[in-house]
Image (tube, rainbow, N blue to C red; front, top):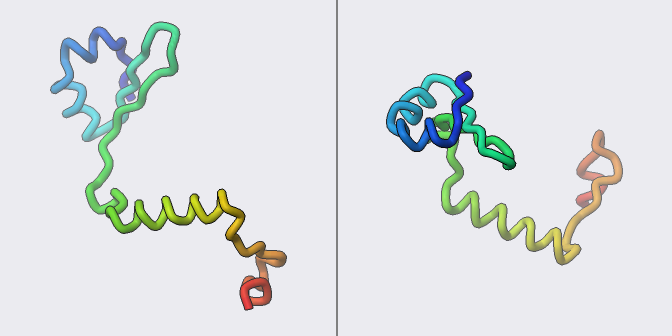
Length: 80
């Protein structure tokens, strides 16, 4: 893992993007939380359909449209 400043990152973005393919790069910022840059394999990114399903699920949760699972060892009892 490499830790660099925001100034160093701005001056050498290509270098650190290439490095992030192999290991995480942490960019520190004065007075703010650091940023982690790391590569994500394309097959691990969610599809548009998956993101839409997540949004719909969050909206249903916010509206209280959920099923409480009373016993995690017997999920079907709560669902049926």
